[in-house]
Image (tube, rainbow, N blue to C red; front, top):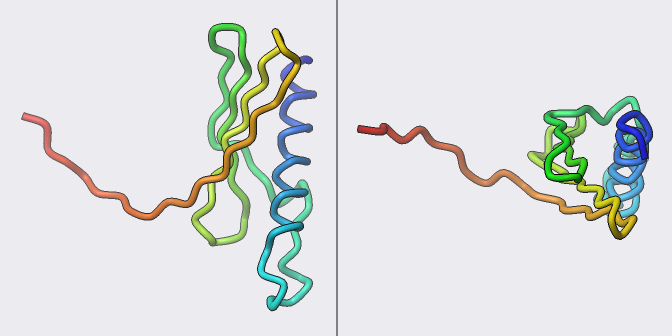
Length: 90
């Protein structure tokens, strides 16, 4: 799988996940498409492709997607940011 194919597949997975699990009490307009998903970070490390994705929906969600070509699997993790603070380093 090439980088472009990975990014397209990852965005499609985020869309599928979001649209399947979004709050059904919200208006149907809360469903998203691939244009609503953006790449926060992408890297190719130790033979794996890994990307961090988010959406235009202000819900604090991040999606980490990793492709392992050795077993031809994609791993999908969904996270919500609960807290952020700065810590001084001495």
